[in-house]
Length: 501
Image 1 (cartoon, rainbow, N blue to C red):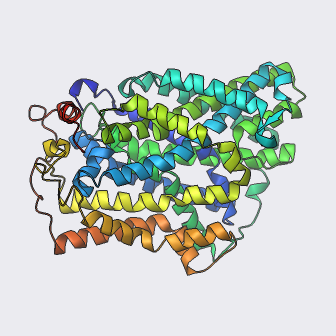
Image 2: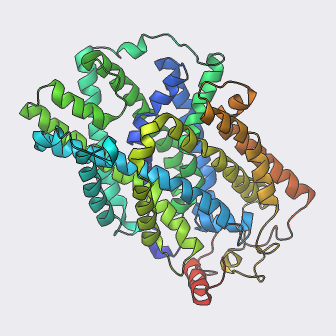
Image 3: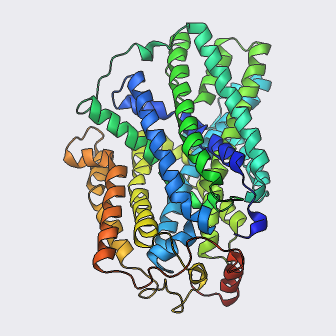
């Protein structure tokens, strides 16, 4: 990453994590935790533990970006080989397609709520599309959402700090407003805080462990790709403090507010509503659409729209665009990659697969079993095997001249460790998809898949490299020296040659 593009300061990464942590999916995290049978207090404890672990993982996975100014795609090259690096990048992009479609659908619904606050008739439109599954007003909202998305994507990543600030302030204000409304009307935490824990399977300890794993899985794709953003740091250690403090704080605060507001709203309106934009639509009808309420709904809905735009850019389209631009730089840059992923996300028809939300969310969340071994291999290779020493220029040579070419461009140790990390968790995913009530040792392992996959892949890769050391260890530098090598020149050379990377 050229020096002039490294514009992210300490405060920039605080805002980055306001975007990543303060989002609608983060707000609704409590629904997953309570589904395991935890009470509200235990769910919050799980959030604290899970959030702290996410912060540590972000520092670890982002370290190569911070010190060597390389993104996830390039980092995969020294671990997987110049051609083998395609595999983790493609898997990550494939999963992002569905998450991006889901986030865009929620964003479209938030837009519809915002417009409905101005035009009450729009809020009560009953017309449907797609066989009655998709409301026409939501489809209109999706189109408007994508217009804003395309406009924001014109901004290069190094200049996104100001839009991120706007998004964080808007959704942060929405959260505070909902929290004040909820608590002031109930003068308590609501009925969820009075319910007793009832673990669905096993004891409370297992349920909390499942909840912590769910938190890690939800942010797994973001943590493994942290180097995509830490490479924009203007100085060493700029992201570290933000990752250790802002990441846990935002995740914990957003999900805790979600639990409190949902609990209080159940007492007020009589329904358990986890999505904030759906709650806003319900409140407009509950208060008979008074002008003051509609004004509040408008600004709160706008905050939800901003949150969805922010999370789609930070963790979905922009990150995947960065990855794809490293795979085929001759044809795809970051912006084109982001647009491509956004188009595929819409083409995936999120309203269709959400019609069977239980099975879909089990499957898409289950893809986290693939991200954990990616993280384990990356961390083991960079910290244990190479001791943070890599030869940057060879990460941009797509033939046998590179020391990271290995055998036909593939580093066999990485796929082996990845398969071993995934092997124990796949049976539980299949069983859970077929029968959500299934409960056996395989399902139990699946529910702690992130820990299992991360630890097994980390240990096995380290052991394999100890038994059969790669021949390129110890060659290179422990950090990027400004005068030695410029990444963009390497990418430019690859584009000119059209060689495989």
